[in-house]
Image 1 (cartoon, rainbow, N blue to C red):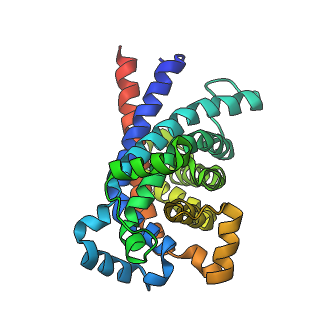
Image 2 (cartoon, rainbow, N blue to C red):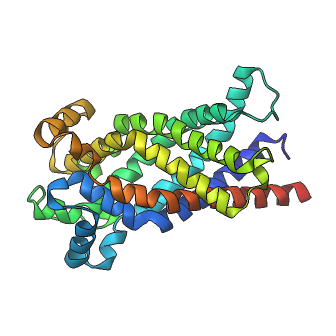
Length: 301
């Protein structure tokens, strides 16, 4: 089975989908707070204020706005990410002159993850665009930036197609790539380094659920600490383009820094850090265990 690339890719894709589902179900409310605070920093004094206002404005369901596209986004992203991760690991092995079954170093795994993220960004950008718009619909309408809410997945998709055509789903692609490529180098690097630390000379495959979850949390923290300002700009571009504002990454960055200061680029960092541990811990736990289960099933035949 190990020598069959097609089966290995299918296992990685399916395990990635399981990990993406676990990630969303665990961390969606914190992601909603992050996007709201990134896009409208003047409206919220902090995480607690954002939570209270969201609940008073739209109720508990407001925390789960955008869950459907978030599930689609994360399942699509992580399926492609982990499938391409396996392929990119083989590319790294070939470039380093290693055997196909050779273990990669933590740095080499981080490099493979960085390459894989570029492919994942292509499926992530459209679904994340819809998610971010749904999450901030109340604020966009209340601030007068749009006159009428498109508060369902279908209506948001229809409005994008009507206004900008199919390519409209790739608003924010450059900033998504700027976030993903360096971010996932840190993500996989932090995860693999943490696993090496917990393994203490043993095989990483022997680690239990707690070390895996802690390692996933460390990976998530590493990712967001490095790329958070880029993610903030991406959210601005994807949400404010709904009101006709089409500034690119550099223009949006300069505008935010000039009018709101550097601190605005870190608005919403707290819910992101709170979310990083449980969400990414759940992601890697679901990925590793579902992958092991499927591999053992195929090896049994």
